Image (cartoon, rainbow, N blue to C red):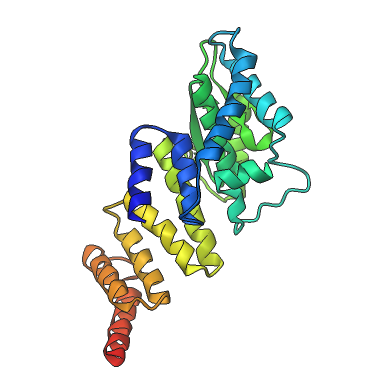
Length: 277
């Protein structure tokens, strides 16, 4: 995993969102080869570029070209009447699986849209709402919003704020400022975080551990990542490694809500190790 971690951080350092997103596929299979999918995305982006090259820097026309290419030509599917998001389906999050199945979730669809926008020189940013993601496009005339999960539907500012209010109500949130602009680095981090949760829910400790290893590269100073790794080591009966990680967490977070639980687990692991030795 060390080589994969190093490659991922180098791709992020170079602002290569496409390469970084596909590198996440190695969480499931360390031998996964992302290059054919890089070529596929660039070919799709080339189709969109051919539709826009005579329009110069018109943001609306570039966004329309992306929409046509992704949702008409490539037939990418997001929100449908029959759609029911399955939070424990990793195929919704791995970019290469999204490209194969042509189905994604709000996060992966925004990720792919951002990659296409980067290829076309479309200035935009990703906005994270409660349980949802949108794209904000900067235009000379006025900014506008795109919902990649809803087939690239354009939203005016007032429509965006209305959607945001609905999202808050569904999540029982009170503040009117609970959305944030997230960077490509943060998009990749959220993708890996979600995969970690997916595999923990599925009880697949080995693959969850690979996701946590990537998170340890993204957040090298995070005691919480170290704690999660220690718990997974525990499930896999790597007791010495688990104890080391959990002890580090206890040292760094003496006032954590789960301090007593983690301390109790650490003591139990020490007992198991002594019995086995």
